[in-house]
Image (cartoon, rainbow, N blue to C red; front, side):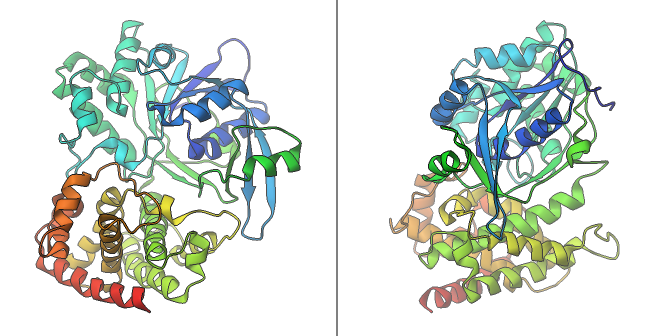
Length: 467
């Protein structure tokens, strides 16, 4: 797809972004800011949220005209501050989504992007919609709480205004995120009986897959004061992140795109190798050390990495992953050993202050998305899974603490049904019930080798906790 030429004023193009949380503002919004700073001012972001949990942030951003400070910090402790100005309009939360629909239906809006977290796509192991979700059920009846309900309203309004093509760009940690999101959207429209709109989506939109990467913790309480001391600005909506950043996108855009490659975005034909490395090496290992850290009573990821036993868990797991990602039939274009080392260095950054509570959430999405593929591939080839089985065993131990009310911080999970989970953990053999939970295991459900490995790993987790 041709890149839109740089220009300002007339002919400006809009990216509508759904989900103005910390990650978007530390990642996608920064890339566009840097592009605008280079002279390509034609593109800007209008952003809002589908939920009211970001209302205070959106209010603060709106008062600042969409501008905010990004603090980045390197593993060596070097802090840098950037005043980000790519968000032209902040849409305060409104359950009708009226302004978001208005912007999304405007032909000048060429891209609708979104960050709603992995759980926000309501997909099961077969990439079908999870119809048990109350939010999804409400949207199938006409609501606008999920990404599917919101986009159905936006795209229907767009068709009513002439149906200009548009790109739907997923920016979440979901494997094959463009393909899977698109399948979910098309199924959603089919189930709602909106066949004409479904046909238009097929013909007039694209959904490129993308890989996004930057560790972005929740803004710590002292960030506002730190920004004021460093910049003199009284910023009510700053965000912080590590210095590392990466964005890889399949170059398949329906209505033009910014020249992102000029500011470091990798535009590729296929994102598969990059996303597999990111999801299995970084995301899964991140969850591994967070669950282990919670069980040891630690608060931060960098504290976990200073514990030799936790670092060993991470290395044992990655040792089983790398042979799956680099095979004679499909050699990886990435130096995976180097990638592993960079990932562990990033986790050890003591200045990011990333919490175990944040990284440990959404295990019901992370086990099937991050861990099951490695378990399945190794079992299919008869290779051991002792290192990988430690991850679900660690998660199970954390769930048991949640069940007993022993976690220091609340546990959030967009897929887990708390009542169902409590009932599972109340069974006579809760570990066996966990190993037979359909939401977690997909194609491995009922595999005796899996249950045996997780039971063995659970014994090692108990020893780890007691040591």
